[in-house]
Length: 236
Image (tube, rainbow, N blue to C red; front, side):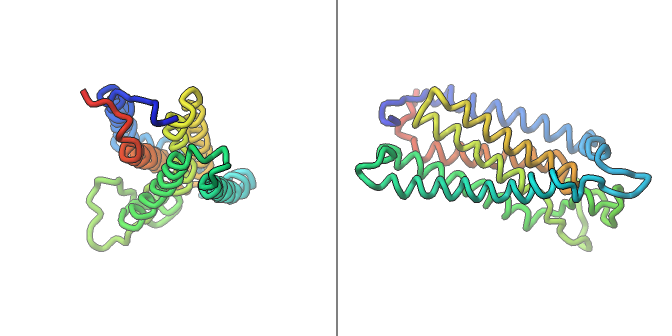
């Protein structure tokens, strides 16, 4: 039970914020400023035919994109149902009402932030760029886009984010079943990586788009966790 769990704030903050933030900054910087994004994406584009061979691939599009989206909706619905059932005093989920509310809130927050960012960012998808058969210039996140270019609305990666949002399971299990917390971490990382890889193969996103989506989902879950369970922290 969460009431019996105590967390050292300083150690928790270093492990869950400082180290992940530094890793994110290094990886994202390498992808953005050393053109690693272009090098990786170039492996999925057939320059001689000016085509994305996997754009309409049944596995990448039908199973991992469309099917993955439906799976996310199904899992989100299951979490909501569990939360509603937890209000019944005779339910085995009754002691976990707060945990499930956190899981629901954090699972929604990451994708919502990503959708909001996508509505403002100027970054285009790889398949829209002149480098890969499109008609848009390659502009990175921190480049000046100019006043004449329309917003690209392709950053961060929403589909990868719909998988990475389940990183919140790590924090959920940290309170509900601490011994199983890393299974939640592995599940969220695996699902987001799988979704992201499929979209990269199709030309829909760069790897940096997925890495940023991962960061949004992780840190939004972290902030909500610290708000929901602030009483469990030991402040030194």
